Image: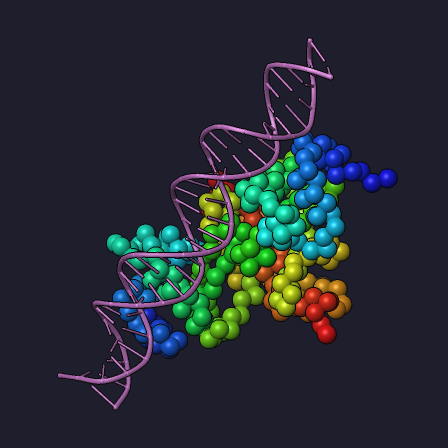
Length: 138
Length: 138
DNA sequence: ATCATACTTGCAACACCGTTGCATTTATAA
DNA sequence: TTATAAATGCAACGGTGTTGCAAGTATGAT
């Protein structure tokens, strides 16, 4: 049995509101990371600041994670269950298609171990692969 | 024998000017990637647009490469000889220190091979390791 | 050396985005 | 139902990428 958007929001310490529920559903139905613009377009008229704060809250509560794919336009994607309040766990590779410009999470791709020189301490690593996605091979 | 800043600029199709020469020297003497702000501070008074265009020109001509370390603040570092006009070759890992906020190129770290699912085509890959650099271990 | 030309610089200006403050509206728990 | 805390909408500020244009500068030909 799937948990409703309301439940999910409450479980993460967020009040369920129409906007938040819809934003959350958009992330759940998305097969790629979403930029602010694309989210805004799904609403009749939503204040960009409200959306900004919604995304910020979602991120802080571990519902979504921000992806910097190098385009300069931040994108967001839903997290998995192992993400909690302000403590993200996202050791997965992101793929950015240079053709359709979509960015996706490659959860199943093995995350490589980077051999950093002694003296350095690794906290977390970000990997973005740029290329052509499966849908853009023609 | 080292080539002068003038020579380097000319060799990349850029007219040597006082500003460009100084910017180029700043990159050569830097042990880390430089954000616009840090470059601006090295001048008495430089127009931010001029610096913006200088960096853009340098990047297009293969003198420097832009690094997106996830902070949202673009940084730049000098390229190596294998970079030419609009054709960058930077398969190296970048390290971003969460303590001193410096970003460096780890040229000697082995760049891992990412096993992307069939159907995907890899053009280039960006890797940023976040953590603590050698200078920040105390 | 001079000079015409192309490039560079500096300034104004615009757009976009992150961010904060504040008043109003909405959700929640007593 | 109601008091309280949180969410929303709007104004506003600052930073930055970007372009246009006029003035200054480097360059190659004469």
